[in-house]
Length: 614
Image 1 (cartoon, rainbow, N blue to C red):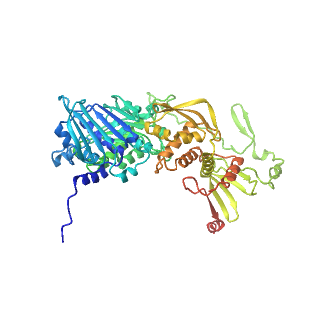
Image 2 (image 1 turned 180 degrees about the horizontal axis):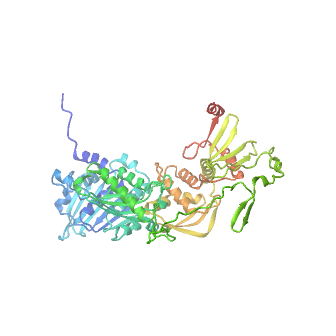
Image 3 (image 1 turned 135 degrees about the vertical axis):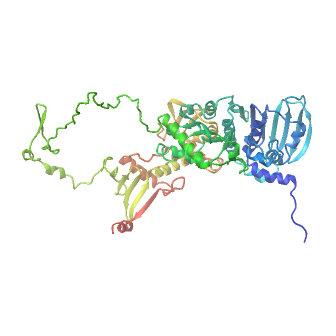
């Protein structure tokens, strides 16, 4: 029987490696920018065409490469940073596997211009699909300039599964944010289709965070600074009131390398326990300095998952550091010893005289149910219960008991805190009750119908928006005072991708450049007293969807806008509002489910109540 095991050709092996290292254009940007940092660059420029599909250009002013190094850099496992296995446990550079350039050259057309600072002549190298097309001497700027063209040109299946340009650009922006936050002393430039997204100068950490995420975040930042023998932690955390419902501003860095660490994330979240709004996530930008021998960064192809030697101990330090920072800035409850109106603590007399116990005058005849109180000469006298006059006309209190009540409320201070509204339904003759300002209850023939008020409103708004998007545009109501706002670059790109759909729904939003926008008008059919909150809610909801934006974009915008605009839990509806919700819900084509597929209503059979009362 002939031998069947054979070595793969280098070109095939490189394409397989590319499947691990190069998943999308953002992966190319990450690897090349990290190489530039390792080369000692103080300025890195990133130029993109079509979110990296057509062109990714990375130029830096680093040390450059010789002609031999330039050619060797594209071989698998060729690296300048590792000499022995022991070096794996003391890594301080970004890239070290030696697979990135070989993987990129396997699935793209790559041109390289590089020149060392002490040389007059540089090197030009052209590789396409792992094949060297040309290598020659050239004159170029000091440093290195990579041009990666037509990504996945020879792997059409991979290129087909790339998402829309807006989605791929968002991933690139996220990678740039990570590396820029880790290296605030380096200048970065990001340009997409000749439009500048970032122009970052040399900064400290706080200024870099503000430059990346907008001026509004500056007042949200609380500094963290902890120094222990095991780990040093510095950076910033966000105030609880500015926490968001989606991830996006949560960053861990260890020895200037971005990392994902769910275990440490739980330490931060536990430090915020009981001071966060439900289902929200605070911002944090935390930088760790540890001995490289105490971590292992070689456990994942993208090097974003890192193993610590003493994770449990560091977990405790993180939690204590965050809680201390929150306490220093009075975010968590604390005792204020400098407050006005200090507590008066009596001091024992110096002559050691006898201290008299304070006395309290008590009237043993006091009756709290006594109606009349007579005051005489500073003392209080009470009329005897026997002298109390009988209440007259008490029977009138029960004169209307035979009538149907229009509205019943139980005050919130009562133990069950029920808020009930009771109203006759005009079309069915049944009573609708709002329970806990969250559910609408109504008796039906088979039992009790329970309706989730927020989901019901979402379904109503969603179908209204979809009807509008299928036909004519909603009229926009112009704002008396247009509202200007600034977004982070990834949120700004997401908003640009849905501006046309928002316009169809009645929003008049203009792009001012530099990630700034202005709201001139809002849909006339919405109560948009806070239009910015609705826009932010739409963006947060859009970021949490898995599908690509270009697929059913209008449906997703309508669903997100419905969720952001629907009445919230805790809102006490008026009887006419309850009737309107019910009428509109059962006029919908799909009243049973919200746009996200959650159940809107259910019916509890009468048999279930009978079982409970047995």
